Image 1 (cartoon, rainbow, N blue to C red):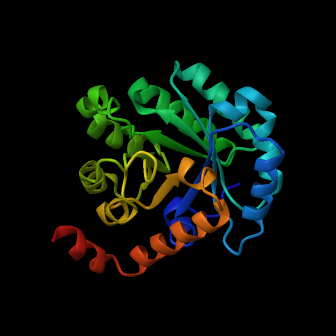
Image 2: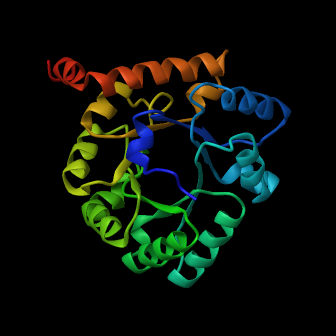
Length: 241
């Protein structure tokens, strides 16, 4: 059961750690270290750990992070019936949020949102991907996806940290929806620009996991993110110079 909405959570833990690789002994050790921090991060679990370890890896990570949200990032893109079944199974394995591709249609969004609501979980919708190619098709329909996500009862949308101008556009449309932004670090997105544009949370994977000290890297990202949240006007002025 979700204890709070994503926007409330973001004011305390605005950095989501992306787990997009196999959960080996070294990764598990680091996850234990993350979980023991004063502010343990939400964790986004992608396809690779699920393919390598099965859907049960969601539950095993949940056991390490009992108080932090787990986001299942398999980007469902199927018919509504199948989307609902998949989402329900992911929650039964331990997911608190499930990410769905927005382009797959408003009927899918409504069905998955309904299913997740029954299970005490939440829907997050991809409005536009952070890759360069992600804007080729999404740019045509992204604004409509944002509106349909809100109508469906989604808890948040995914928008590109690599294109803060798009986050600005989506923020004007989203109302109370949280904006989660991947692309800071390895893909070239800037943390300060992303948050001042209107994102609530950043999703970071490679920049943390490939650093010499992942815990210190996470702490540095948290410090910077909380600085922006506490004094956004200072960073907006810097960005606009």
